[in-house]
Length: 368
Ligand code: SAH
Image (cartoon, rainbow, N blue to C red; front, side, top):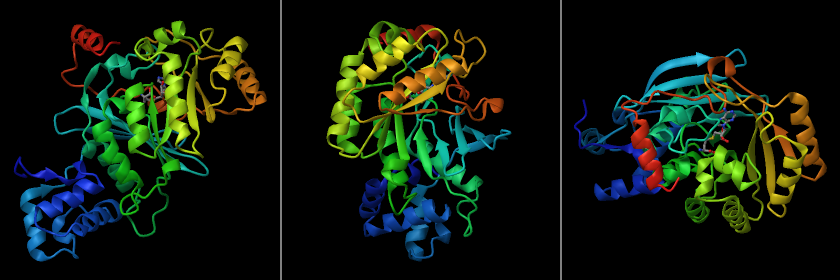
């Protein structure tokens, strides 16, 4: 067992790691060396980090640790999608999903235990909210997936090429821990993915979106799902706090400083709710002037959900209108639904879940 006051190095981003070593009286580049060992070689045993002096390795054994979540379930779907249920040190569980495709392999990671936003069509909402994930619990999902996929082996069969923060939780409500984890995903001495291949998805926490714009080059996806405030208030209650006009203004600001960036707008297709040609035309009007891509998501049902997925021909008609108006529009393929790994189906296991009353109180406090 490690002493409780040891630092979990996974909780430190690139700068934090360098600062950790300077505080130990070592050169900052030791932080980079350790980062390479951990995230490129998959080595978590300090004793094996052969380019660190023996005394330093011993010291690290005393003051630091590398603590990962524990894999409880590892499930594979018939289409190759894989889902892991991970148990955290406090007993809470989260889910991480790996989605291989022909030309890429995407890892979908969680940012919180449960979620406070209570979107009407999302099963994570039913779990209640417990807490933010630490940086180590976020990047730990990537590390574990890389290990389980054999990515640290010299002749790795396949690498994670893209990461999306689209698992459980609202990443912009946990920005302080999400930012260093994003840095590790993109740092050349860690996972080294390009900023175009790391995407944060948000329901639209406007002030945090402006923070993100200033602090990270990451790609952005926005869960829009509705084209007027009345409907969006119902589907994504966060809209009551940050209505469409404010959200879209923040999206414009986001792309203003990033000349080649495009925002992905996610739009879940709900039968008879938001899927008419009039909705498509409204969407075209709303997104005018914002460099965007549109991702239509077939609704993934879960027990007790009140919605149905739009019929395929309605999705196609909707998509065609958007394409005709000049928007790059894809309909997301549902992946891994036979193991409940599809969008909105991630449930994990929230321990000591916040009671409904407490949750409502917290939501009221957050202005939701
Ligand atoms: N809180 C963030 C991250 C969650 S991402 C956000 O809202 O963007 C998960 C994506 O899947 C979001 O676009 C979400 O709206 C969508 N989603 C949630 N439940 C779904 C369901 N049942 N079917 C399809 N998509 C769903």
